[in-house]
Structures are given as C-alpha cells and as structure tokens.
Length: 146
Image (cartoon, rainbow, N blue to C red; front, side, top):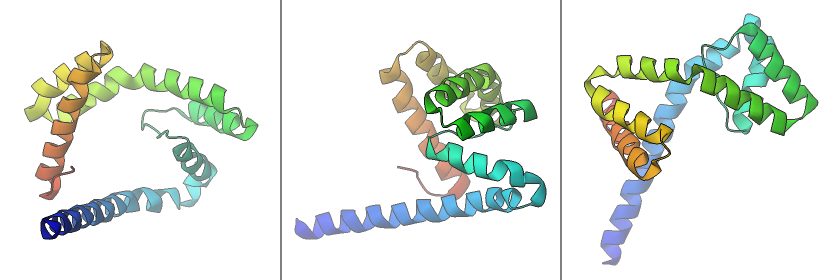
C-alpha cells in the first residue's frame, strides 16, 4: 500500500511540474511583450493587478488602464475590486462569445455551464468547467490539467 501511495505522489508531482512548465512557457510571450518599452507604463500595473487576483482582458481601453493604474496608486483595493468587477462584467458576454467561438466543438457544454453559473447554480457549472478545462488541456498539450 505504501508503494502505491508513493507512486500516486510521484505521478501528482510529475503532473504538477508539467503544468508549471507549460504555464511558464505560455506566459513567456506575455513577459516578452511587457518588457517592450511601449508597454513599460502598464507592465507594473498588470503585475500588481495579478497580485490581487485580477487579469487584464485584451478588451480594456487605454482610459480604463489609466483608471485602474490610478486606483492602484491610491491603494484603494476595495474601489479597485469594485471597478474591476464592473469592467469584467461589462466585457463578460464578449469574453464568453469568444470562448464559445474558439472552442466550437465544446460549445454545448460550455454554453450550458456559463448559463448555470450566471444563475448561481455552481454545483452544476463548476464540474462542467473542470471537465472542459481538463479536455481542452488534453487536446492542446496531450496532458490533463487535473
């Protein structure tokens, strides 16, 4: 039994190492872009936002970047969270449509999961999202996410 548990732990560690490697590879291009001089004013803001659990959607306008940057400088995290929530909610339908277009073979389950999530039916939406994430990772990398 101990040998079996050790094998499971090794498999989990190997899979986690692979996820970290893939994440590092995927984010390398983002880091390269952010290191370009024209992105310098926003690079710090984008990194700081990530510390609070936010990502920057490609749809954000320059004025919104500037507004977010000012909130970060103020240190008013409650206001920042409120504004980021408003921005993401404003772009959410477009983000969902882009996901559905990009992954048209998974449109049915993803569309239903997004609907269930909007209805706050998390016991329905989250397992479907996890299954779809696992499948998408397997298709894209040959490895499962979970």
